[in-house]
Length: 107
Image (cartoon, rainbow, N blue to C red):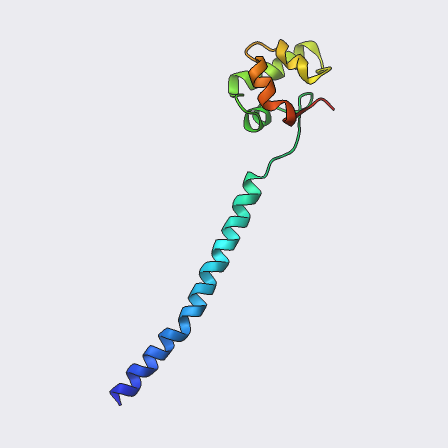
């Protein structure tokens, strides 16, 4: 009788392994979908409408101070006429502009 109980317990354990593996795979797939959604790029950043937080988050080499300087420049001088006008903002150089050129728009 003890042998039957042990075999029954062994069978239950073996039968539950595929369920546990399936649950882990489902959780892993769900987590990777969430990670992908969080990392997905926003697209082009409009220099004429983006706030400082968006500029800081989306552009390479743009921290809080430079992002605020871009917004301040726009407020003082009006909308950017071209992406190259970003070079007029203090602290933005050619290297920073080139790193971000493909991410920027003005319309």
